[in-house]
Length: 338
Image (cartoon, rainbow, N blue to C red; front, side, top):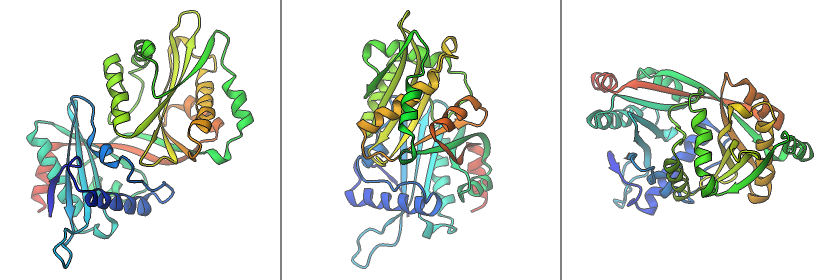
């Protein structure tokens, strides 16, 4: 049975069952990824940015002999933002090839269509069954990134310390746990806005407006995700010349997520990109002693950042693809196949 589901009011048993399915999917498809934990999982599934909405459904297995609800074998949610619905579907490996995945996608697509949205996007991990699944539904690949992973146990820390000190004269680096100080929010947002047209994905949008940036940081904290920032400040003007962001999620605290790394055009060529990322790793070593890995995503055409990541010790791991489809066409196709 598929039913609409609200993680804010769900029972602890339901949250635990969703976690079991998530970790079963990871074990089958991404066995090198760390399992998720229940820490702040409810908040992760329910908290969203102002102006965004997340709608969720679950599919339950057969009830137990005592009438207790069955395990959650599938979960789908759609995040409504801008002019697109961003889909995420999880189906327990034991329930695959039963039509459950299609049923979950159809349920979400119908709601997205009713809400007046024209397209659905989804992130699909390369070399997993999800690629063939979404392509069979008519989703088209729009964008490809490479995920790379850094094992902190293999880092050459003396070399990293030298890299962190390699920024050009006239700049200094500042570490900001929790987010940039409020007196730098506007300069921080300007730095991100200046490069907003770089070739990055649409399903993980960045924040360029100062208030939206504040909202984004607040939302991260409410979801149990701790942000860390390293800034490169231009001493003569006080401008934010470069920035890098890493988030440590409570749900998988042994592997951090790299967010934006940006160097403003006028300040390129001074070693800022390498220095701020190296400084970040040095700070994380102290701030998050249980952290074991950092994962990052880069456009395959971004050769400069891929080179910096390789020098820091990152190793390419998987393709990370964005797919999209017209909602009306998807609903028609799925209804016709029933």
